[in-house]
Image 1 (cartoon, rainbow, N blue to C red):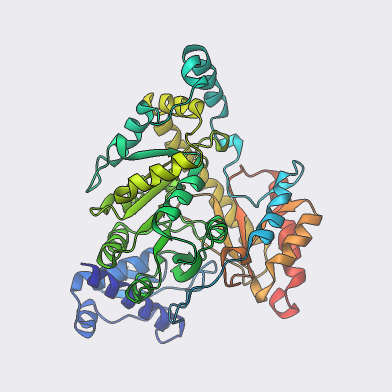
Image 2 (tube, rainbow, N blue to C red):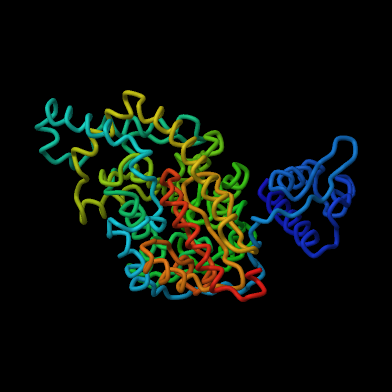
Length: 480
């Protein structure tokens, strides 16, 4: 199955290259499914899967009884990654000073917050969480006061374990380690499967927090080209695994930050199969998984993990309340090591947070909240995307996220996003430059913009100001 999936990826990429190069003009009919099946030596179903995917992404139109035809390229489409950059060599990470500098502005209450990836408090159930906290304080005062170690709060872990009911290899409550947010879960996972000096494969671009974590623990990075809609290149990743260059791979298959893609179930399954074939552990960051627009697509890669090689990491910081600092990990075959590291570092996680979250899960409130949150975030992201495309100069490209609340924006004319950051900061607007989403200095002409807040006149004005700044930095030809 995995070989068919790799062929599917290559065929899709080949067709897109031909379309972009003009080999097939707009309105022109593509070769028949049977012709491509014979040409590439794959099944008809594999070719049909390629065509359906390209149709969903807006490149093709499939006409019944007629075939597949090229559609007009959409203005917001993103450039495809270059997965021919071999060898993919490990590099050192040195981004901490830059990231800290870019994060400082978020702490100023008067700025327009378009930088940090986080839904605004207006779309999160703050009153409900506070109410449950008061109830816990009254009814479970002793438990909230005391430690919960060595074991986590069992009602919480039992609720979390129920999420894996449909997985090929469900996990039990005792398989779960409760952590202080997702970053601690990722830290424990990284330390469990690698040592200082080792190299770790990551998506490119990837969340800057992942790069900071690797830098802090003296790991090197191998950046693997990543498609803005399909996710990490499985063919490139297989080469990295086959050459034995990495000790682990850190990925975010659901609503990845900053690209916003969600890998298909077939590609997630193939990713896990790669991990098993080469015995390379996967560290899965699923912090945005609960926000995927279509929940049926949001199964994590962990759902296909039969060998215990996927360390699953998640938290409620992005979907409920960042101040709870409540995360969790499922370590698979590395569970014992994760538990040892947890007890040697932070020992336990806040009792109050666990008691509150258990109640919110048991009552069904959290599931109901997620249904509403997905709708709200999808609407806000679409509004922000429309605004950026109308306010920024021609040639701007914006991703189409499948979840989360961030947009990955490519600026026209190679505009340096660090310069945009400086101009925006002077105007009281916080954005995040793209250069820190790569250890190799790529993506300097990208911005990440948070769309987690409801659209207001203040936000509209700020985005229009950003558009003016970008236009002024662009060349006159690209400006018009």
